[in-house]
Length: 520
Image (cartoon, rainbow, N blue to C red; front, side, top):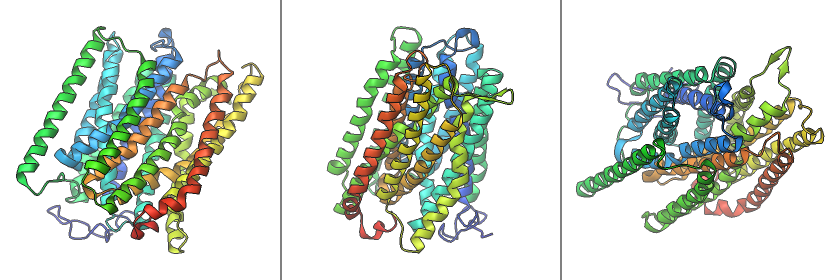
């Protein structure tokens, strides 16, 4: 095993030469396990939310209608990814990547503790306060840990794609076991046992990063980007602190008004309006980058490619992120979950995607490297188009499953293999798009904006989560006719997007720098 650092924490061996973690830099192991436990907590909590909030008060839930509960899940998940944009900005300009990750991990841990304590309070305030803390913490942690993964591979190329595929496997190992553990505890023994298990996972992730980062990451991510002029640098820091202070103050006021009932909140209306906000944020940000970002011609081309990938990623996630809402409700209400007298928890179906990724991520990591060595590597747009196509196949399958339910008037429950098959094709699509997208952001982003560009990548996921939440309520035993149309529209949108992107790939490749075309 190669030695990547000395006793002082400095790095005498470049990340390119360090192959101490299955042929990759040992710092990848730190990031792998930290992200694994963070995803254990996030994905362990998420599928419980819609089931918990829509459960009757007598069953320990909030007794909300499923449309409202699903919208809240969408808003929460969208906010998690939306927070990645200011989280990347704060890391780039104020905290540095490493301190941002640590701060984020602490906030997430506090959020889970707040949700856990909500079972002892006769109010919903600690529950929703916990969700807000998780949103803030994930916004600081998620984009910046991915940015450090990219920093481990300054040479770029297929090896970086392979590294991100391994990193992505860690995400899904955590997601798989998180949903198995929390789903079983939450559905069988009580919701807050599941919530508590998710919190324990985050605390382990926090401890992992605290103990391993200095030994394996050296100086990576310790310092924020600094302007060479100290006067301008000081002005930028003051601006960041002022904006951050104002934002936190406004958030505190809104929380206080909502908690006291002075400001009534309608989840469906908020979710619908957030769609315009998210699209507006993307348009304004990319407009700023082109007009006022100080980019040269080469950098503008790269950002243009990022914008195109952003649009198609948002379409993909709008379908894929129906998993915790519409597909989760389909598993609970319309799927035969009896197995030898044991009723499979509905949330366990959320782990099917993670299980397939765990099995197939090493194959895709090998595939991209092998294709590159043979001179036949696909470009990022081509991989994205494949991802959209396979996800579309997954929802074509759900059309048949939904029609079976509707034709029986809801009297029968369908085989669980419908959902398993759907998740299989969605997983292939995810592996073609998501790790490649992460890698592309780090390769194409201007160096001084890499944290923010990772935030933009997760903004596409925010759009997807929001739409997935808004449509999730359409899976309803009392409104059976809505289900097939939901899946038909989803499948058609994915297939059309795949065809458009395939056709546009040659044009997009021309926008890429010549030294990046074969690598992206």
